[in-house]
Image (cartoon, rainbow, N blue to C red):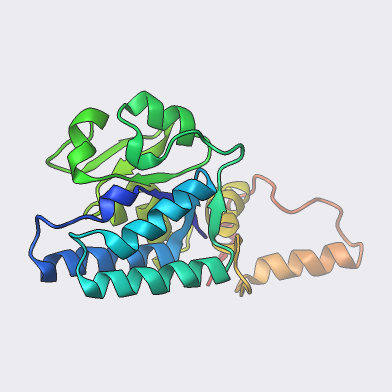
Length: 225
């Protein structure tokens, strides 16, 4: 259950904030990435630029530098550092137009974390720090607002309340709840008597109707945990 997240190297510079505040914002962003994100780069060059930024950005408190280094190692070890295909010609830190972000990252990234200084040129409202369009990817957000970007907020909500709305079809439940929860998971536990009854019936040949039909999940008493 991961969102594809690109983080501009220059977004790590929170030097205008007091160190305790900057540390807290870095910590929240890192926790969000570790819980719900894949870190996306357009090329090996951008990845190296990001590593250099962690090591050399003057506006990064030492505590944040240490946490980013550890987080990057953890993401790499778990296979959650990925590259766009095909590689992009620009880095997120260098893009100066919204069209440029949509063109290069739109199909391969869910959230783009940008520097506060880029808000004006990219059209991100300064009062919210988030620019989101349900029909277009990615959401754009500054570090302080990134955990609230819709693509990430939905995963956080789904983790806390993995249920379908009352009256939802079984197909919608599988697509909007079960699929994102199970994607990339090592294990999954299903507490669904109706589901297992149906699987048993299909296994023993007593029914032939495939799972995932339009029957209402709410009527079956399904639960997921």
